[in-house]
Structures are given as C-alpha cells and as structure tokens.
Image (cartoon, rainbow, N blue to C red; front, side):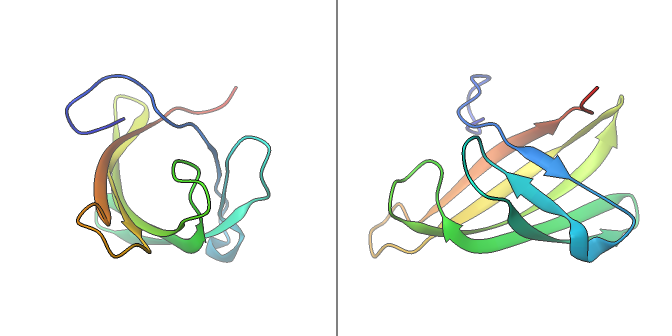
Length: 101
C-alpha cells in the first residue's frame, strides 16, 4: 500500500524458513526473488534485489524494509529504490503480511 492509502497495489508471497538463505518473495506469475532477512530485537530487516519491478515494467528495483509482529501480522514499511534518473527513484510503502493458511 502507498503510505497515504489503504488500497493494496501489490501482493506477493513471502516464503520464510529457519535458514535465512532460503527466504524468497514471489510475485504472481514471476519467479521467486531471493530475500535477505536479518533479525534485530523485535524487528525483521529485509532486503531484496535488484530485480525487475512488479510496479514499473522494465525497471530494476532494490527494496529494503522493517517488519514487526503486531496482532498476528507482520507490519512495517518497505522502501523501493528504482534504477531511474528521475525524481521518483525512491518510493516508500506500507507492508502488511498475513500467514497463508
């Protein structure tokens, strides 16, 4: 979600395991992208990329974020750094993750 909206603009599946090298994010109809998690106190710091953006066709993006467990969901922010030379090269999003049943 964008910072100022509750509308979901992108979904993906996050696969987490005890082995941090096995974490991935998978966007619909795309191959998995390796993710690098790191625990820091009550937070999970995540980063991925560069990979082709799911929001900007043909543009490479690297993402990083911080997630915390709140009421059974992982919530936090994700910052996207796009490989473009314009003023919109960075975007920040709200992230909410629910456990897949």
